[in-house]
Length: 85
Image (cartoon, rainbow, N blue to C red; front, side, top):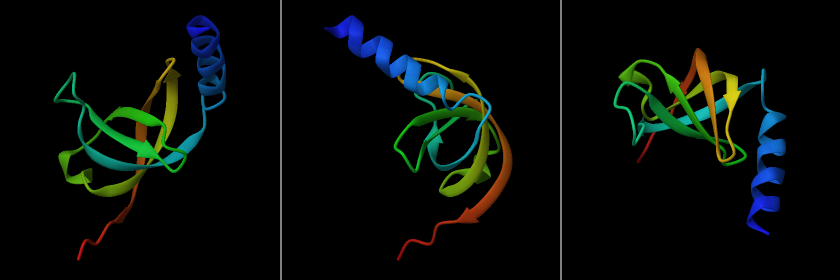
């Protein structure tokens, strides 16, 4: 059953390859402080290199690689800042 779930998730993530998605940048990646991490509007984890100033903002990221549970990409544009009250 786990193998089927993993295979299905990996296939769905492949659909993102080459797309540009909006990502809310939450902070540094847990595995590499030089990589930022955030989530798409569909709640997919995206790891990419970008400036620390992007943390807390929505940025556009081109997906360059997919894994079973996450996406890798390149930041192409800083979109907007999130205002917290």
